[in-house]
Image 1 (cartoon, rainbow, N blue to C red):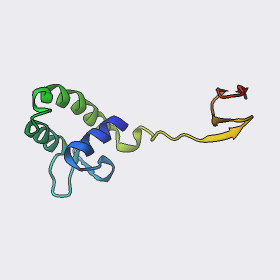
Image 2 (cartoon, rainbow, N blue to C red; image 1 turned 180 degrees about the vertical axis):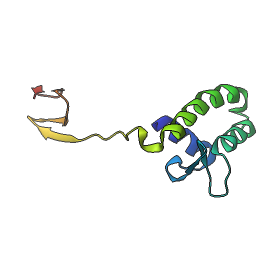
Image 3 (spheres, helix red, strand yellow; image 1 turned 60 degrees about the vertical axis):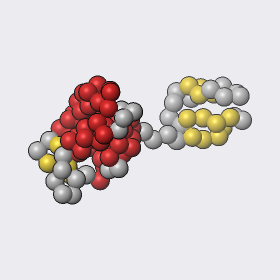
Image 4 (cartoon, one colour; image 1 turned 30 degrees about the vertical axis):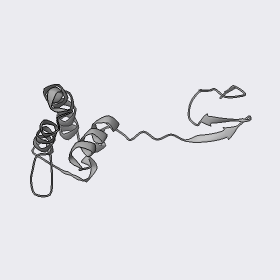
Length: 104
């Protein structure tokens, strides 16, 4: 989800989170399908035009699945970091590694 959202934002300037889903497609406020806009933009760029078909195929499939299932169907990555036993630890993990290994 992170890479898809980042790719669409980088190429089109739109954040998927802010778009509506209509008929299984992410659309802008004026009703433009974001995938059509994405394909158009990658074809314009001389650095991405050569690989546009591969990029459109890869991200298009992910975009379709995310629109079908809903933006929140894949939770955002949330990390909770704490300090214990002299080292930083990812809270919620069974095993943490740091200066002093701690096992919950």
